[in-house]
Amino acid sequence: MASLSTDSRGLILPCPGCQQANRIAFERLAARTRCGRCQAELPAATGVVEVPGEAEFAALSGQSPLPVFVDFWAPWCGPCRMVAPEIERLAQLTANEAIVAKVNTEELPTVAARFGIQSIPTFVVLRGGRELARTSGAMPAVRLREWIHRTLTQT
Image (tube, rainbow, N blue to C red):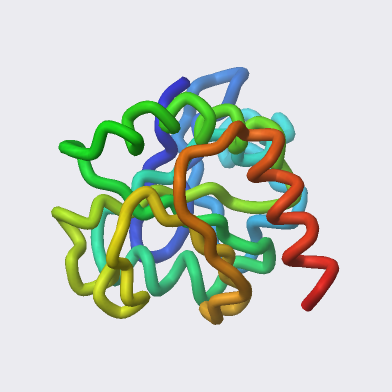
């Protein structure tokens, strides 16, 4: 599965019909949207958002009406690489429920430091830019989804 691209204003989703790239503003991620070219309804964001920078992370985590699940990882981390397919699967399982994002702690150390990330993989659930819960260690997508649901019902 391909990663979703983003900028500081929204996610970039390709239209399944005409392949036009469409920017969906972060604050509209929970709404139904249509392709700007062919007017086909765009599917929910089902890929993993590879966060490219601090501005994009701040915009996504602060403006998304959907909770944001963040995987803090690094390329040299064996358990991070092992759990990567489960994170991809989680993005499929949580379409329209949450946005799944990955933050490379080597490329965005200030974001990792802001959250006090000391071991990886660490998973954080955010709503409105505020941390709701965190857990560490590789686990299956189904267990991660259950953890997200428990977190959201307890807050």
